[in-house]
Image 1: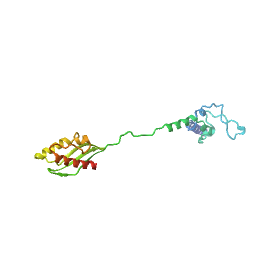
Image 2 (image 1 turned 60 degrees about the vertical axis):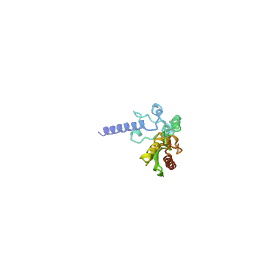
Image 3 (image 1 turned 30 degrees about the vertical axis):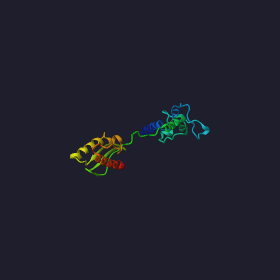
Image 4 (image 1 turned 135 degrees about the vertical axis):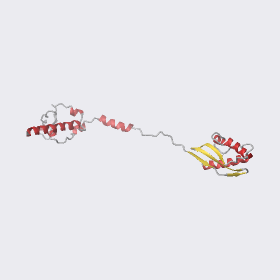
Length: 197
């Protein structure tokens, strides 16, 4: 009964050691494929004799006893210089990551001061995308009578996304005929808004 127990325990330990040795890092294919006739020399053995023939399965008695396997200097030396070169090549050929997204353009509005003139008061609000004016509008313009008509003419000429303010990107606008006071007040508020932007 004891012999059977020892045989089973020895077989289990031998199988475990075989699995550990086969999968141990640092072991090279050459060390695993070495013929049995080329048994490694055991250090400290008299006359530097070869180690005794391994037991079936290629497991030495020390490995069967459950002792942890230590990679030999030979196994570590079996690395090829090409492996190191490949690792170095990968490290040197790696390209730095770059972001390809364009900077975000901010859209903002700036309102000029209220300008009082002969027919009332007005102010101009401009919308900018980055530093470019994309829209302009007059606020508080008179709506009634002749003043209202003049205000409509000024708005039609200067304001909007296709008006003269967007086209010229400045307050250097041509005066609207028949609406000199309104045009002048519009340009004053516009210039102040551009200066603020």
